[in-house]
Length: 268
Length: 306
Image (cartoon, rainbow over all chains, first blue to last red):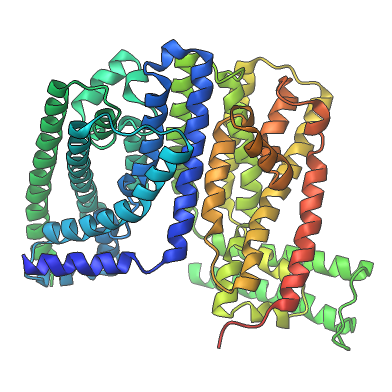
């Protein structure tokens, strides 16, 4: 446990090194927030009934999605598992990861959590504050909503991490995952409710999305924040996120064991 | 057999370079070390050097043909999510303001075509930062060819053609859906818009890179611009507030990449025609500004490398 603690601290410190980049990253997100804000206002002016939500809730949803994208974009974090594994496999340094006494999956999880927490505090939170003060974002619907939202973000992060980790393991088979990563990012953007809220999709597509884990990343936390879910739905949503987080984590574990064995046979 | 062929090619390239080099020496242009700009012979010489630099680069990259197909897949995947977003919004809301799905595709395609002018011929400009910071920029100043030509001639990125192709495809589909008939005037203006738009992209990227002359550190400014570009590419400027519209029209004229051309070519009421026709003026202004900044930057430059 102490080892994980020091990993956590090291990553936090490394993440804080480049201050100027942070400011520009914040600008980047604010421009994007302004963009979605304008888009939904324009669409709402056109036909309020079709948006499916009152305007403030919709604008909040869209802008918070942009802010959360800072930590939830698949390869946003430098030490995102798929980037890290791809690097290690390409350079052949993956054997040093195998020599370490701690498991690779846990190690990556701790390091990613540290960077994500850092970005959450220094980028997402300022972006959210600026959004609330200047762009008409709403506050969360209540104390319970806030707590559930926090839990939902953590679970969403776990789901994303496990998906990324599985993607990283593909690298052991294909050796290069750049194209696959692009396809994956595209799918995640479309199906996670980040760019387009899922309720705007045609029925058949919504049915497909309900079967997939991607909506646990953006749609669930955002729906909880904007207060459109009743308490029963919130609990069900959190349980679903928990289920996917656990299932994907175990799947990652299984796959990693398999890869590990395969590597042991290959290694010299 | 194969190796011998490669070697022959390589020597060819070397010889071509040597010839041009010696010819320039033979004419004694630089005997006194002073550049004579404005001289027609000088311009011809620089142009020939650019072409021979391009030829050498082309030979180098033609060895990796698979790159092209991989890039094509990447371009489609990268833009796929945006296209889906545009389609879903247009399907749900029928239009974005008075812009239907065809119009939005024209907007998107125009942007990609203009952008591809940068990504095919001038991508190297985004490397100025690295070259200045690492000090390898010095090399350009020692050679008798204009540093700018050396910089852009050192790279031609034919994978950028994937952007052109996808942009053209989207434009074609969009025009068909919008059902606009073009006359000869439209075609001429289309060419003017693409050239001006390409110039604007190149100049803006160039100016961002030139900031490095003064700050001597890689400017991450370009990522902020990426976000502005993304908004311009996907949405008509009319959905934004007045301040943003003024910004992208008058200050950083990126709306001339796709918005004003689309307004003119599709006959939209979003902007008066004269404002759209200012496109070459905006491009020319940026070229002048770039030239001034570049000269100032070169004068200010002191090598960062050891």
